[in-house]
Amino acid sequence: MKFLTAYATTEGQTRKIARFCADQLTDAGHSVELLNLSDDDEIDILRFDAVILAGSIHIGHYQKSLENYATANLHHLKQRDTLFLSVSLAAAGQELEDREGLEHCIDGFTKATGWVPNRIEHIAGAIRFTSYDFFRYWAMRWIASQKDDEPVDPHKDKEYTDWDGLAAMLEDWVSCVQQ
Ligand SMILES: Cc1cc2nc3c(=O)[nH]c(=O)nc-3n(C[C@H](O)[C@H](O)[C@H](O)COP(=O)(O)O)c2cc1C
Image (spheres, rainbow, N blue to C red):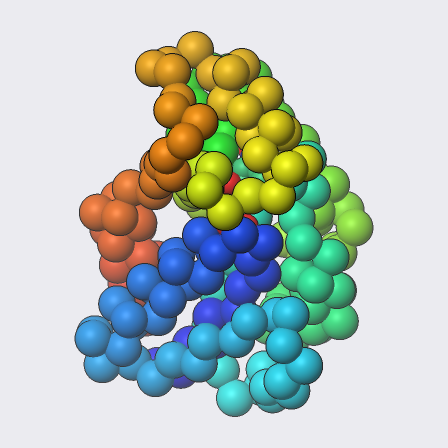
């Protein structure tokens, strides 16, 4: 099958996740195109059987480039199998309010774009203290301090992504798409 994996990233974790998916699909014998939505590349979506769109949440919103892409390609997305990977810190949380917050973000996104993905998965992202600018560093220190689990070292990066879980989910989605 031919897959398009298109992503928007602000600090890089969603790119890592999108590459991971693309590598897994390639290893399984599929044809895959990886598209960074902040590039100006024109890739014809009609060439693909199925599409993965991935983006990350910052202050309750996904990247504008992701929203624009979903809106502009709505008609073609509706005609294909689609998977939306929503990357966030809340996805690493266990609290009800984390889940409710994520549902709220998805609601806002589907209302803004009109796109209702066939499958939506919340993927835990990362904290990258060592590469944030002043605003992001303090925003993330505040967000991390609101979490109840073990305290985060503000001088170290921390990755929450469950790679084995992501691989299993992707395998499951592909098996459904192929049927
Ligand atoms: C300034 C800032 C704001 C953020 N806001 C949220 C948020 O509202 N909800 C959330 O769950 N995660 C939030 N995050 C966490 C990011 O979603 C997480 O770090 C993710 O891995 C970023 O993905 P990216 O590196 O692909 O941009 C925020 C991170 C930063 C730096």
